[in-house]
Length: 561
Image 1 (cartoon, rainbow, N blue to C red):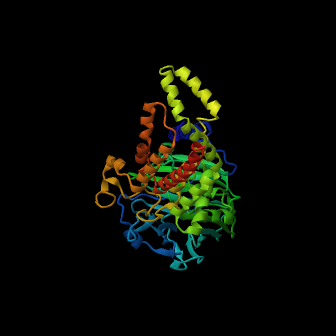
Image 2 (image 1 turned 90 degrees about the vertical axis):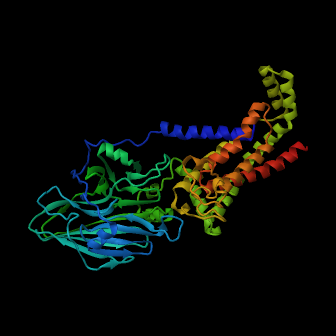
Image 3 (image 1 turned 180 degrees about the vertical axis):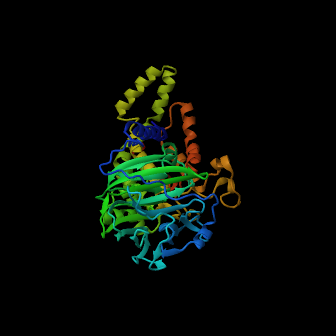
């Protein structure tokens, strides 16, 4: 059986396995919106913030509010003292496009501007007589700017002589630590529940690709929960109870997360509302009850993550703070057990070669070494099949339309010559999951975003930019819509050529129609992979070249023996 036929069959089987896994393995159940069972007193947290009928320019909102600025060289922005919220954050290491003069990624946006997105912490109480700070409260700060591990204390006191403080500290990466304190100088005792939330207005621009989750998510009792924005629009509110974990919202490359003490019982809530023609999405958690007596001084800590999902940084927070399954915020997918190790291998190689393109090529070589014994057996079998080609053609001519007779003689011939026509399937089947896992790594990890190779490849996570319809970069025009299918780049063409040459090393099909069909496979795969990430096409091309080299040596040895 031809190698190309095996490849085609392997892809079909692998896709069936992938989708069958999702159907057969029970997925996390949705928790009903009503009838929650919480061991602590249930306290609801309404969606925070209001939506103005007139949205202002982002910079105008920033100018009109009093703020404490922060900058640690990776993120910069400000804390709004109206509400004490973190609603202005720019990612200083990432730009919108490959153009070095393009804007930095604007991540969090202030309330009152378009696409508002912010983080907040505070308190809720079942006692409605207690005056609590809200997003209109005017806080005062002890400084106007902060840097790394240089905290600011903001303060608000109500008319009942209860003082609320937030001590906000930013680390060297993307994590804010918020110590909330309550100083009770009133004559009352009351119960408080700490909360943290991420609030987003409008539905963000998304990839909308089935292998990628974008939207609300959480780790609930060490189990990953994921919901689409449409899920919240349908259900309105979804609640879970957990001990530790975290909750937030994720985009493809960046996310927000509210992280409590990992031993604390919490209530996680996903919420949606529609106000002034704007969609409002919120993820929040409410912590355990704290009794505040007269004269008491109590405190509570939450950590707020806002930034890119860099695997090493995410894992550092997992180790340092024991954050449950925080690495699941990077959508490594169903093959997590395979995808993440492949990423770490690429990252390890990158540490030595300094380029992810070369890391992919070296990784491909390592995979060929790992699969060498299986490939060796497969290629030996195919070499025998190619050697038996004339005999198989003779049987076809001898038996004509007597397919049963020809099949019987072919099986006898295979047995006599110890040739296995299906031996090529196993190594290819084993490589297909690696292929899909590598595709996932290139698609979801921010480390691969805008990662260059050599020459014209400036982003391994994007398709080859030099397309056929632009004469490989000599004609500057934007290829429209469906014509993109035919705008295949140089690397996909090289892959197609390598696939065609590899096909020539395989035994020719006995059936002429089958031979014609498989002759078109390299062309089909060239166009299919033309829209895939360049890094993936480089992997496939390199794999083809290494396979041909191994196959050629074996065939020369067996056919000439």
